[in-house]
Structure formats: structure tokens, C-alpha cells
Amino acid sequence: MKENLRSEFSQRQNMIEPDFELYYYTDNNLNKVNTHKHDYYEVLFFLEGEVTAYIADKSYKLEPGDLIIVPPGIFHYSQINTTKVPYRRFTLWISDHFFKKLVEMDKSFGYLEKPVVQEKRYHHHLDNLTANNMQAKILSLLESLHYDEFGKHVQERLCCCDVILSINQMLYEQDHPYELKEGQSLAESLFNYIKIHIDEDISLDSLAQTFYISKYYISHLFKSHVGMSVHQYIIKKRLNMVCSAILSDTDITKACEQSGFKNYSNFYRAFVKEYGMSPKEYKERHRIEPSAQ
Image (cartoon, rainbow, N blue to C red; front, side):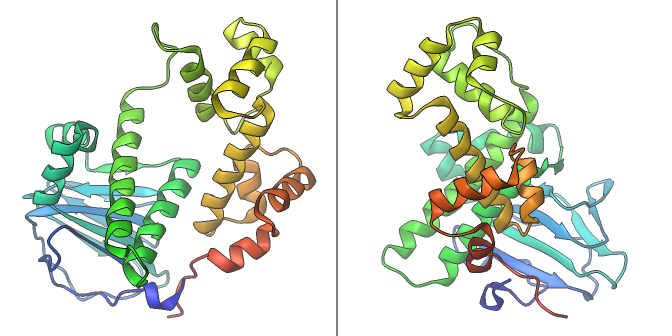
């Protein structure tokens, strides 16, 4: 990881900033952190380590890609089970005031209250694609907090809103498995289907068979809505997922396979055409490395 993005762990349990704070931690040893609670939301995105999280009256042995959401007033703490593997994680603090402001702006930001606050589901495991996408968004927020550029204040809040909205979308999708819904437009149905099945074989012919409509009509629909063919749209979506996976330090070949590319040579050509550089060059420019211990 870029060393200037890493934070030294502190036992401070109060927020300094009025809205949100984000930290990237990597530790082999931690001074004992007693059971505690906050008056803000704490989101922990787990990257690596042998760690058990204790929240309220339950314990969770964490795995890479786990997302822990602790609302205000809930007692919790984490315990490192071995010092052989660094405990790497992102920790995002969101003030209750800022959270309520977002919910007032749009109720979508507050969906998490149902599973997390009402149903007390604090632990969520993300699939590879979702985890990679989530990590890429968190990294964008972390970088915006560390670099002084024009519009920094606005960029930080946009990135934070993106992370929080993505968390709500993930929770909503977990609670509402995809179905073809009556009243949903054909375009929405097609785009949602591709999103859910992006790592599978998808073609114009298979879409026509699934939706029982002419492939020529589907082609026309994609051209009118997104200005590209079905194949081009799928390739762009898959390349975007590969980039998210690369930013989360996933092996390039594995990222290629997870995103639905069946042939590495075709993937490589498409990647270079889209981004003007090889996947390896992209990874070297953007990836975050674990710090040396």
C-alpha cells in the first residue's frame, strides 16, 4: 500500500471530524482494546489476518471480504488470534448527525438501519466481485482524504456518499435476490440480469432466449440506451470489475476469470484498448501494498 495512506493505530474512540473519518490499519500486535461503544457508526472492511470480532453477544471469525457494521450504542471489540499475519482493515467512522443528513436527502442511505439496527445483523460477507468493488470505492475515499486538490472538500463527500450508498445497495440486494419483476422496463431487466450474471457466459443469443424476445430488438435497445452493442457493454462492465479487483490487489489472472473473461488474450487486448496500458502497468500505478512489518 502507498505508505502515506497508512494510519498508526490509536485507541482513541471519539471522532475528531464532524462527519466521517477513514483509516487504513495494518498491525501485528495491538494493545488490548476493551469492550467499548460509540455514538457513531463504525464500518470495518476486513482485508487480512486471524481476527475475531465480538459484537454485542456474538463473535465472528473474520474472513477477507467481511464487512462489519456497528451502529451507535453497541458494545464491541476485536481480538487478534495470531501475530504471524498482519491484521489489515479499513475503518470508517460515520457520525450519527451526518448519517441522518444523508437519510434526509435520500432514504436509500438509511436502508442499513433495517438489517443492522433493527435485525442486529452486524456481520456481512461479500462475494469476490462485490468485495473488490467495495474496496475500490473505499480506496478512492482514502486517497481523496490524503491529497490536496481543487474541490477536495466536495470530492471527499462524494466519495464517502458513494461508499455509504454502496453499502446500502449491497445490503438491499442481499435481502432482495434478483427477480424479473412485473412492471420493470425491459432495459432495466436486461441491465440487472447482466449485472447479476456478469461472470457467466452472456451473449446476445442467450439474452434473447432468456427474455423471449428478438435479439435484433435487444441490439436496438442497447444502441438507443447506452450507445453500444451488447457485447461492448458486457466487455466494459467486466473490465470495470477487473480494475476494481486489481485495486484490491487480486491476482490479475484470477480477476480476469472472476469477471467472466474466458480467454486471457482477448481480455488483454480489450484492457489495453480501453485503458491504454497493460493490466500489470495499471496494477503498478494504482495498487495499494501492505506495509512491511
